[in-house]
Length: 85
Image (cartoon, rainbow, N blue to C red; front, side):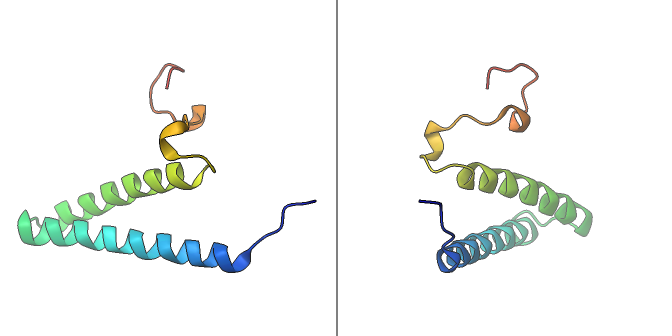
């Protein structure tokens, strides 16, 4: 039996991930502005760093069906210069 696409569940999961990522990005910006009193250039840098790390975590979370801690990253996602990760 072939795999079938459950579009409703995929849409809900994508919406949940999107809302969580938006809340994460907003929280980072608010923390940088109100707690750290950063200027606009520093907030832009903080935003880029937050987006990069948030996207990497999202990639690790959704890339497999097993638990996140049981998966090894693919060689292309590994940032170490040797293939031991």
